[in-house]
Image 1 (cartoon, protein in one colour):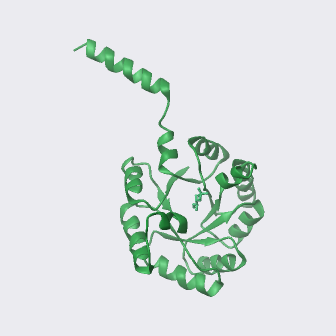
Image 2 (cartoon, helix red, strand yellow; image 1 turned 30 degrees about the vertical axis):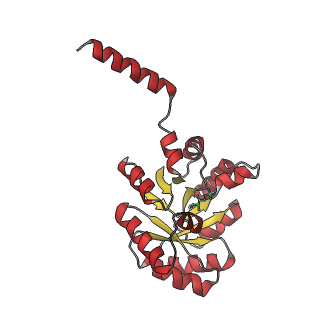
Image 3 (cartoon, protein in one colour; image 1 turned 120 degrees about the vertical axis):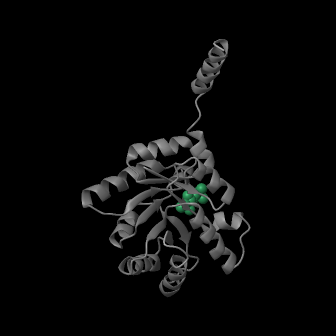
Length: 217
Ligand code: E4P
């Protein structure tokens, strides 16, 4: 399973990248706004900086909702860097645009996916990635990981090439369960990635080893 970081924060992207296990980055308009980025030029420059930091796909989301505008915006985003993946919402015009991008060699991430039916449409349109939002599903008392399992099964049995990108990750257990479910990619906040490191027996064991090592000096 590939690890993407789900943030537009450059310090967090650098920290995750320094671990040597980062395969890509996802952003969305809320994450970009949180960094205080304002205006077209600043947005484009920020995506370029991220692409220069991380050697892997960087999802940049369109802000338009009509077919013609999504295509125009997506073309500009894709021109920033070869690693840009145009992130398109799961709406009717979005699906049409994903098909257009597929036919024109532009990679896409179909976002705001909450059902297997939506994931089938994204795959039919040729999306590079599909992003089911598992944390938001859990927040509404459904099981987000179950949706990942269902989509992975459908894609495998139908031979769809779209990669299942588990999004809206809230904790390290989500990451473990998405790996079990066969997700191709998990996009995670830095805190969830770092949470995977934690185990009290590791800390206690290391403390003892270091103590015993000192007694041998
Ligand atoms: C990433 O592609 C999604 O936009 C993101 O994971 C959504 O996460 P949230 O539900 O925590 O906002």
